[in-house]
Amino acid sequence: MTARSIRGAAAATLAGALALTAAACSNPGGSAAGSGGREDSAVVGIAYEPDSLSPLLGYGKDGNSKIFDGLLAFDGSMKLQPALAVALPQVSAEGLTYTYKLRKGVTFSDGKPFSAKDVVFTYRAVLDPKTNNPSRTELDALKDVKAVGEDTVVFTLKYPYAPFAERTVLAIAPEHIAAKQDVNTGAFTTHPVGTGPYVLTDWSHGEKLTFKANPTYWGGAPKVKKFTMAIIKDDDVRATRLRAGDLDGAILPPNLAAGFKNDPARTTYTATTYDYRTVTLPTHHPVTGDTAVRRALDIAVDRQAMVDKILEGGGKPAYGPVPTDSEWFAKGTERRHDLDGAKKILDEAGWKPGPDGVRVKNGVRAEFPLWYLSGDKLRQDHALAYASDAKKAGIAVTTQGGTWEVIEPRMKTDAVLAGGGSPGDPDFDQYLLLKSSLGGDGFNNMARYDNKTVDKALEDGRRTNDTAERRAAYDTVQRELVKNPGYTFLTHIDHLYVVNDRWDGLSTQTEPHDHGLAAGPWWNVERWTPKGAKK
Image (cartoon, rainbow, N blue to C red):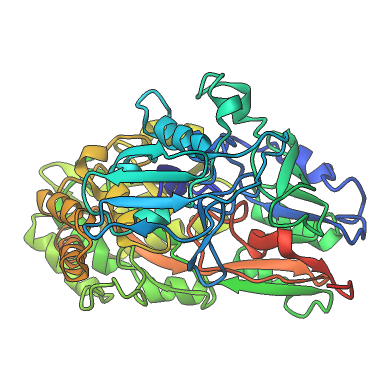
């Protein structure tokens, strides 16, 4: 999980407000019917846009960036495959050295050659404290990176970090361009040049990103020659534009995707995910900072009802960032729905019902605001259900929609209906979410959770490659969240996409929270072929 993934953006979202009227009226595909029926063009609707398109600031760190490549990439089964590297890395016996041999003959889209120096530049720039990359801590284990000739890169770690190879899907930036600019504000952040299958041709902020196929792509020129992502924040507007033919595909919440179930011209794709919805419980609020309140809310909430009614079965209850079907899930940490138990916890902690049913302790009413992102129906529905369950226990939760610009300054004291999740290693989610030192660091540890036992376990889990030791560490983290939940985890949600049935080659991966831009059936759009076309 990244700081920006909690915020709910596609491929790292800190999206700005969207001008819905303009988005609803514009036609990013340039015709009245999505891609206009062109076999080599596609227009899809996504919910958010990134702040930047620079890998140095976090774009493409989890792969699938389209403009860039990493040393490695995830295939459809989420297994690592060579990309800019010709093979998986050679790892030293002690797990401290990773050596990559690079693919020869690769060029950036401006025609300049790719080499080891670009890899070294990218990683060193990300690790530079002057670079505004909220995910820098994900590379905490990296001590040094150096080039050996033009086609070999050697990474040296401070400690054995088991999932390091998964971190090398990080998109590689061209030194000859990015090194000559301010890393945080230079033109490269919005006019990127990479080695990937597509080249950005236009970015109309709040409206669309348009790409053209890279004819010199080392993996072969894509058959889809023009690919447009329409930025449509509102779920209902996205569904309306899909139905009207303005879009060839879109991500939709379950209730809206259901409207296309019997459409013979469209296919619905369901992706399993690590994507969770959670309520932050800020430690700096007199109510949510009380452990008894946290524990009570943790069992007052009816997670299964949310799965059944909000997700229409497209998901599962969440008890932490790790899904219940993951090999890393700590069995026995499931929390049952127990309203009577929640009331008992509050009674024993001194939170007594007042005349209006809202509990009071030492003159403090058990009430707090809960913010959700405007236009995000799933978050709104989760927030309303959470407030309803809390009310039954005597806790008054006031839900409020807003943009991230409104919500962010309030996160220290106000609860937020947040999202996060990253497939793969448990370190990816839990460290950024729970490490006390990251409290208040942008969208990391939004609740400012502070638990020394958890801090130690998080460090233990990322500083060894011994599976048994790592499992014990992450079991400790999950069991501590039962004793003192800094968040109320609600559901892990499936992602639903509805796409015109005009291409072959579509599939889905196990997806992170960030979806639409980097994930979705278009994760491999460069391999799509028009139906009926010669392979």
